Amino acid sequence: MRFIFGFLLFLMTGGIAAADCRSDQIALKGDWGSARFTIEIADTVESRATGLMHRASMERTAGMLFVYDAPQRVAFWMKNTLIPLDMIFMDASGVVTRVHHRAIPGDLTAIDGGNAVFAVLEINGGLAADYGIVPGTLARHPVFSGQSPAWPC
Image 1 (cartoon, rainbow, N blue to C red):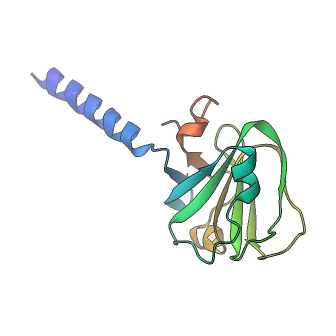
Image 2 (cartoon, rainbow, N blue to C red):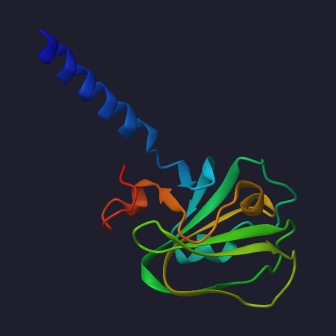
Image 3 (tube, helix red, strand yellow):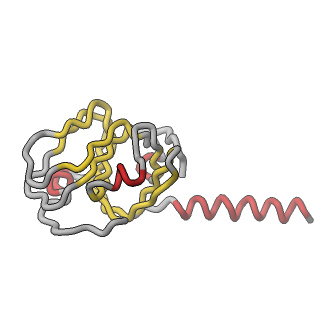
């Protein structure tokens, strides 16, 4: 009987963990703790080009996840962007490789994410520092599932 109860508990725990990995949310964790953001996905040329342009505000727990078909060199700018943003660059396994803090609204200077970028999370400017998000932080989201994720769903 204990075996059956333990097995059912194992299955239920696995189901809960899988339910936590949703396409509309991304979780981050590191030595600093953890954070979760409700996100929009930008995974087409058009949606990545538009990004968060023309938005006057964004909820503290919101963000946008830019996803590429394959790891590549990427650069961002802040054209038509009205709010300061932190840009969190990640590799194909969901490991943060670079963080750009407080990108300046309207600035046309290229923000280089480096090589082999698979995804970029944009959140409100200052939050990465507030939370302690740094290179080496792990991200959990279904887009990393087929890429040998560092933190699997």
